[in-house]
Length: 133
Image 1 (tube, helix red, strand yellow):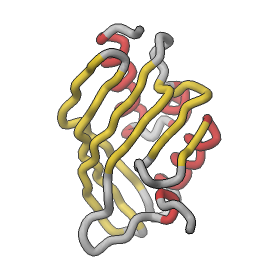
Image 2 (spheres, helix red, strand yellow; image 1 turned 90 degrees about the vertical axis):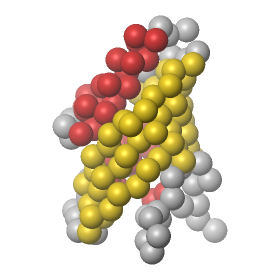
Image 3 (cartoon, helix red, strand yellow; image 1 turned 30 degrees about the vertical axis):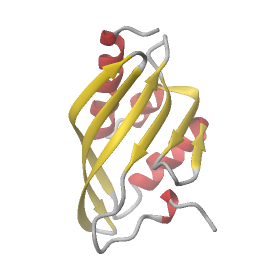
């Protein structure tokens, strides 16, 4: 089981690399067999290819995101966080809060994540995050 220090380092790297738009460093923080439930109830995203798609969708033309951890609690191999998300979607500012749970392996890589969020009032969820009917 990873130590608290390893988990803290992994999570720090996650936020710093995302906000610096350092894609290679961000991707390197994840296990190759990662499973993302982003958000829970949306389509499951599996593996590095899913991370690549998430990155590309988040930073496509007219889109950008910064993420800020507000509070983190570590138990066992998991980090549960309240996160503030500051974005530009279709050239419009957006803010939302999320609850996120990350599972970290002994190598300090994220191997599973579950996020809980919804669009702000009056907005719709990007189709990338919605299950197809």
